[in-house]
Image (cartoon, rainbow, N blue to C red):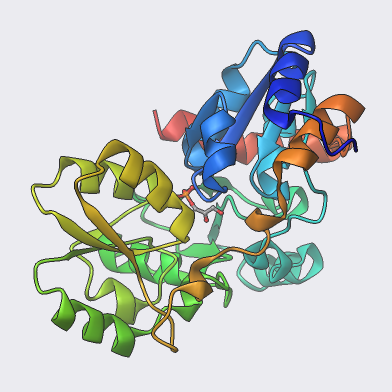
Amino acid sequence: IDPTLDLHAEIDRLRKERNAVILAHYYQEGEIQDLADFVGDSLDLSRKAAATDADMIVFCGVRFMGEVAKILSPTKLVVIPDADAGCSLEEGCRPEAFKAFREKHPDHIAVTYINCSAEVKALSDVIVTSSNAETIIRQLPTDRPILFAPDRHLGAYMQKKTGRQMTLWPGSCIIHEQFSEKELVKLTVRHPHALVAAHPECPEGILAHAHHVGSTRAILDFVLASEAKEFIIATEQHIIHQMSKAAPHKTFIPAPGADGGCSCSNCPFMALNTLEKIYLCLRNDAPAITVPEELRLAALKPLERMLEMSK
Ligand code: 13P
C-alpha cells in the first residue's frame, strides 16, 4: 500500500462508510486499543459482538474470537486483520482428540474455555471465559463430574475455588506458562509494596503469590480501585497500556520470565495484527470468518448457555 497513506484517517473513513465496529482485546498493541470502538476481555467482546447493530465487525484479537463473533452474529461480515492469528490453547486441543476425551468420560459435563475452535465448542456442554468460569461452574448440577478443557491452570484454579471434581485437559497458554515463580519472588523482594495481579491461565506457583486473580478486565478493575501505587502484572503485557492510561501515577511492572525479563509476555499471535492489516481488512472484506451453518448452530448452543448463565 501507498506509504504516504494516513492509516488512521483511512480506517476512520472506511469504518464509517462500511458501518463497521472495531473490537479489540486488551492484548492488542496500544495504538490498536486506542483506535477501537470498544476494548474488552473475552466475555465483554462476545457480548458486544452479539449485540452490535453494525454491518461489519473488525475483530482485533485472535481467530477464535472472530469465530465467536460470527457464531453469535451470523448475518454480520466478520473480518480479522490476520488469518494466522491463532492461539496455543486452541492448537493444543484438536477436535478429534477432544471427542475421544469426551467419549472416555461419558458421564462428565464438558465445560470448555472459550479459547478453542468452533469444532471443540460444538462438542461441549457449556463455554466459559476467565471472568465467568466460577459463576457458571457453581450453577452446574453437583451429581456429575466436570471435564475441563483446554487450559489446565484455569481448570485447576476453578477446582480449588469451587471444590468441584474435575478431569483436566492437559493444555496451557504459551504466554502464561512462561512466567517464573523464582524471578517473580525476586521481583517482589525488590518491590515490597507492589501488589501482584495474575490471570488464572498462570500456573499455580504464580497464582500463589497473587493478591488478585482474574480476567484481564477484572485485573484492570482491581488495579484501578486499589489504593496501592505499584503492581506486578502477570498476564500478556499489553493490558498495561490501559492501566497506565487510566492511572498514570501508578507503576505497572510486567511479571518476569525465567531470564528475569518480560519479553515472554508478548503474545506472538496477538502481535500479528497491525494498523495496516486493519486498514486492508476493512477495504478488502478479508480475511472474513466463515463457519458452516451446521457447525455454527452446534457451537452456538454452549455459547448461548454461557451468556445466559453469566447474566
Ligand atoms: P480474558 O479476555 O477472559 O481475560 O482472557 C484472556 C485470554 O486468554 C485471551 O486469549
